[in-house]
Image 1 (tube, rainbow, N blue to C red):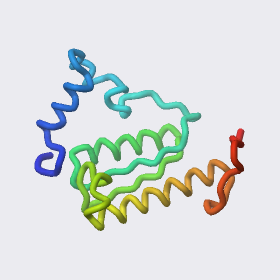
Image 2: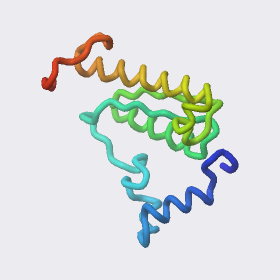
Image 3: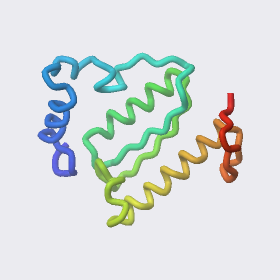
Length: 130
């Protein structure tokens, strides 16, 4: 959990800024960790992306499994050789760029499926499917 752009010290720093004085929320509140939330089968399909060198990788994949167990369609993309925040490096790191392209392709496919499109055409302007 150390040495890959997000270590314990950085994680605690982010928690402190996000939670402020409410540090007791850390262990149970779904606003802090969606894994602790209650899921209903009417939730939207999800795309969960994890990086192999990220201390949050296991938590992200547990979240994907929890969604699947609740009957929610989930696509999980894991990039074993990348670290937390890899999308910030698309301009300087080829692996990050390839991962971002794959995420975009996956998202496009999911959105097209929800809209009833093939994934290549655009939805009619101003129309929202019901």
